[in-house]
Image 1 (cartoon, rainbow, N blue to C red):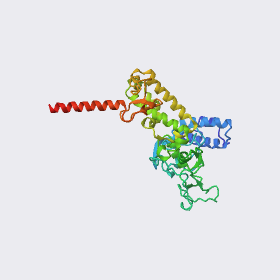
Image 2 (image 1 turned 135 degrees about the horizontal axis):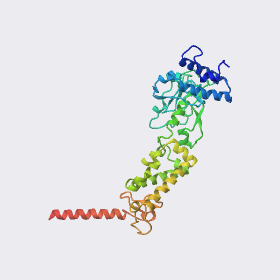
Image 3 (image 1 turned 90 degrees about the vertical axis):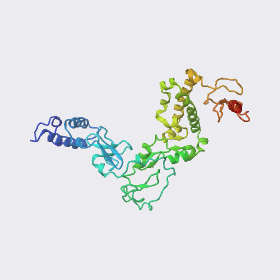
Length: 386
């Protein structure tokens, strides 16, 4: 096609009167042009792609002298080279040809761009924008006039009635308008719609909002009890998850004082959801999504069953920390995470719910402690009088 053969790419033999390094560079550029012109399904293209990779390995590319890590607007860009062809640059929206183009990737937010576009990056790293919570108003549209008919990110002119190049696209997450270069019609569920309407339908958002929501989907930023407590009454899965989380927190003290549990690292089974071990009120967007499809309930149920089996059946040390109902003195050993039990708020003793509801003032354990304290005080007073 260009008068070059695959053998030329394989063995640059100083045919142009240049150094082998210069000939390799010329061969690589020519090979790139041929690959771009050949159909994607062409067998010759596949062979040339493999040859191009070999040539790149032979040649010490000048880009290798570039730093592997660049910091721009909070992005921690890391130099990449891959065989994946289908990537788009978040800066110029054009294709990144991973086989023969160097590109950079931000590990914090997923921003991808050509090497030449690093300096032209306009969007700050969204990982820096993730604070203590999300924007929780449903599509708070501000209007194009308030944006001065310009893109919220790059400030290029946009219009509702404009053509493809300057089309105004609404971001469902923050209510701002963007140009097509900054808004690729990515679809994602937004926290506001999920929490207020339990609506997990994906809506169109800007690239910045998409990267923000994706990079923070595992972070526990949502306190459902404060934002919409009625959600637990209408979503059965959430109510079940809340109960399972509360039970697991009641099991936690057993594992922290049990040498066998510490050796087995039982609590590490929830290391991917550390907030489940720290409390029962915070949720991540991933938690809510998996609560909707039922997978989180199944996972937590299996973990709950495994934890309860260790405490009640497998471990004698944990079994010894159970309670006997001191009101009826009957039945099996009780544990705080059992169903149909009540826990004294003063001494944390466990009783059958029916028995505990019959108590007028204090539970037997609290009375016993009070009597012991009173006796000790009286003995102390009598010894002082003597």
